[in-house]
Figure 1: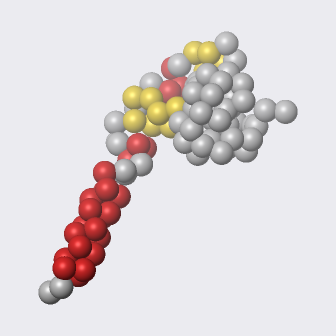
Figure 2 (figure 1 turned 180 degrees about the vertical axis):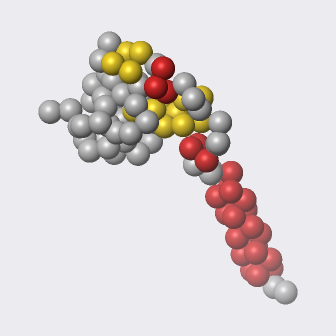
Length: 93
């Protein structure tokens, strides 16, 4: 085996390990997505229309932006706009 092959094999292994370390945060069964509870710019990744990823919500308590919260707590979270939701609400106007 040549040095180039060994380096490529090592790089491939390092890349595979790095990808495994970046598993999505929502893969944790002790957490759930809670819509409508994030403050402006503090949502977790993959919010709805009008946002592109983490930290892109436009207003406090945006109903189509979510935060990860401990499982079973979302619908009991009270905000000035109502309770947390397990499903996305409408995008802000």
